[in-house]
Length: 177
Ligand SMILES: [Zn+2]
Image: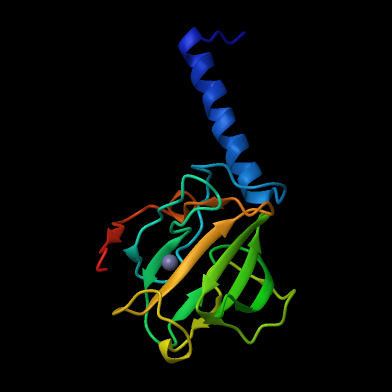
């Protein structure tokens, strides 16, 4: 009969926990992704250069920055961070917004437009929308052109996209404003 030391058993349990977590995060579509979940989402704009970082308000009703601004360009391509569906496309507070629902969370992109109808399934890494010309809205990132990426749940609670997206490689935060 095999005998394991206490340390070996602890290691085995940890390994099984990691495998179970990986399997669930891959295949479960119920509920929000916990922080540090694996596999992480792709950055919707490549390369990832943050012009303005996430800065949540202390209270829900106060001002803050409920997302990250990624350096982009006019008509810059927006990639699906993971498998999901187009759940909204339209104007919100005078800005064109595209929303992709992924794993129970809403990934919102602005200013953005898509030709994909609501309900279209999208796959990880697929080009899903484009950044709209800054002539048509008040530019959130003067003098740069950026894509604002927000992640929120059904209760409109926002999360830091950096906790969801793949953190491999450098994350440049320019803060040019
Ligand atoms: Zn922003």
